[in-house]
Image (tube, one colour):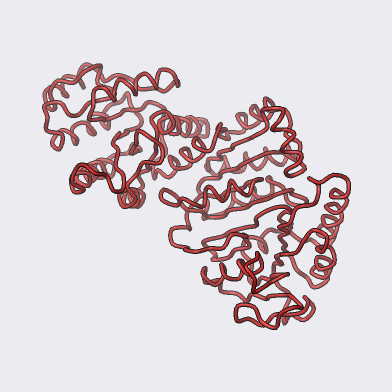
Length: 462
């Protein structure tokens, strides 16, 4: 089944369009703000116009068959217009409302009926019980939240989620990465996560894929899609829920899915080079780490700091999290002593304060790890945030300019690490992002994300 109508529609019909503050209005408002290039057809017998457009009584009145129909009507009213859309030649559809397989036998019968229509007519259906599809590069949306500001939304991350709120959370923050596509797949009556993963694996705008998975409905196709992404060297980051018994019950009543054995799913993901994470913070930090222009060739991390105490904390966390922070060689330590001054420990993490001239010491510190054959990755640990009360802004910019210069002259990936997740300076992040330098947050979470990505790069290269 072709997914182009769903992901790159040339025209969109909104069934249940309205002037009231409903999904049917929000969709059209979003398309206007996006600057969608194709025609948008409101359909509702109760209106002559909606947001300045002619509103049609039914699909049969439309001047052309739309690529996709968005059904903004309740589950008890969707069958008739869906059948009409099929007869009209619609090739894509989104059904937002719940009340299907997650609601017992009656709901399962309704879901079976809509699935049968779509399969008979070759309609790529997203949902039901979903939030739809967003494509910032194409300026198209059947995503039910109203778009307020498209700036910064387009990027290289493709998201497939069986939870709508998971998409909401991710789309609220575009500081470190934007999106190629976002799919809230819901009950997956026709198209499943594997279908969307296959599409994203071949999509030129997508560099990294993230998935929130409750249910793996077709394991064979799912792993084939993971293999396809790995062959394209696209990391796939998966947050799979369902480890607890209460969670498995919740999944059944949420999307009608079956969570399956969590151990089996973890083994499946690992065997097919997906990166499994435990929570949303890990998920976000791995995707942020994947924004680096240069993939890591190994796991060995060299960290530059401005604090001996912070270096000690990093070492404790690295030991507990199985992170590789090899010490500097005797020759490298001798060079550090000559150039930077005395440093505590074994040189990794490297407290570049040294003799107290941080500005002069930083280039040497970065250069030591760049030249070291024992390190694959260079990390600069420094907190910068919006509205901070101390330190002149130009000081932070100066340090980051030195880091940016070091990264540009190195074949190794460079990452900026904040000690806590969420702490960042928006302007600095934007500049580093343009330079291909990823910004991660949290010592455990950020270094862990870099390490997960490094392991994945190594396994893909085997």
